[in-house]
Image (cartoon, one colour):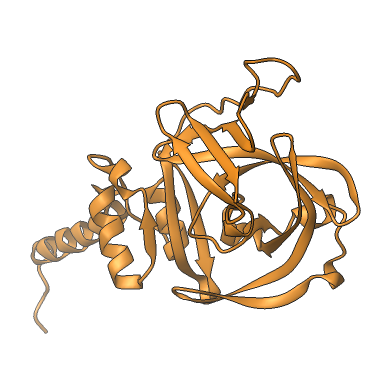
Amino acid sequence: MPTLDPRSLIPLLLLVQGLAQAQTTAPSTRVEVAAELDRLSGELDFEVRGIEQTEGATAHSAGESIVDRLHLLLEDFDHVIVQAPGAGVERVIILGEKAAYVPPPMVVEGDESSETAPASGDEIVLATQRRGASHLVTLGLEGASGGAPIQELMLIDTGADRVVLPVSLISSLGLAPDALQKQQVQTANGAVDARIGRLGAVWVGAKRVENVEVAFIDDQRLGGTSLLGMSLLGQFRMTIDDEKNQLTLVAK
């Protein structure tokens, strides 16, 4: 019986070690964020807003699910991932590079430097918090039974039909879950489970807007970020001043 020379196994062992090393180091590969987002959104048919803010940035590309991969890809950016049914992704909103949170100035009645600036007629002028190309504004939310408003930082999103809030706010607003209508909200990428109801009011500066339709969506799918949609914005003519970081609303 022929004897196997151990030296003949060396090339095979080196090949196996090389493959193992390649498998270990592959997840650490860095890619261009904008190019990878463009590729993923094309393959999986989801919308990306604010992709221009990632130009020139690189990040790791890894993760077992598309949501994990997107979170790792955008780890240096404030972002919102709106999930679709079946663990898919409906929309990605990139707010800008991560920075320390600076809360908007407090409203002090009679103070000209307050969040609500003096305005003529029915104008409401609110200071916004800027994150990249997006603007966020703090409004007061009342449940159906009134009570002290809950201050909520909301992303201005004219693409949302309704005010959209995370499900975790239902109890804080004193709303009864059974009183909310379960409904699948149609989006560009399919239907999303939501609970539809109405807020007692939304405080926009000093103006109280009553009976505003709202959709509550799972916190994870919403990314924990509330959206200021058209069920409120549609009642106003809206102007955003990028230089002054201001939102101006005029009742229609």
